[in-house]
Length: 231
Image (cartoon, rainbow, N blue to C red):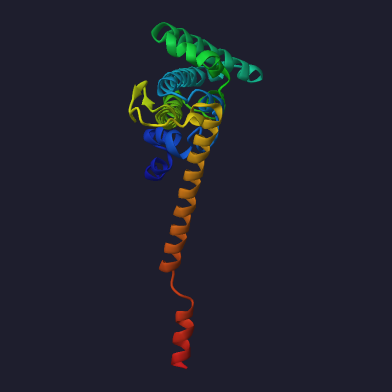
């Protein structure tokens, strides 16, 4: 009985891995697309925005999970937003103090973390219904998944669009930058390419699994052929 219960309960690692890959907030559930498309023209912006979102998500999930029973259901969304806004203010002031140039580049998008669907969605769907430890691990997974996508997009757009990585030249002076990747359409093109590649990989994996299942299944013609020979 205890073994069966333990087998069904998710592990702590699963709470983290789920947000990084199986339920990636950008590539799977397609949340947080506004900052994903807007700030990924440089890797430095991606690091700052990703870490700020991760910080707010982890802190807010923990506090919401711990205080969920004390928040009336009628004002729960307002309470969640107030909690998020508190940590966003801390992140905003920290980035402004530590990296003023990056803070200037990000502009209003740091403040807009308050309305990021990833954070509010994880609080409503998970943090408010689970203990603080699991809520924190879920936030870490979703936050790392978001950071991963930002870094992937930022690296592609900055390297190909400007020939640099973190402001340092990597492709040499002869490289002709793909300027379109540094412009707003470049975000849509890069994200669309990622989504197409993931969809192609899933379809290919499903087709391979189906083909293997058909090869492993016994042929329906074998029994009938054997019966005909016996007759």
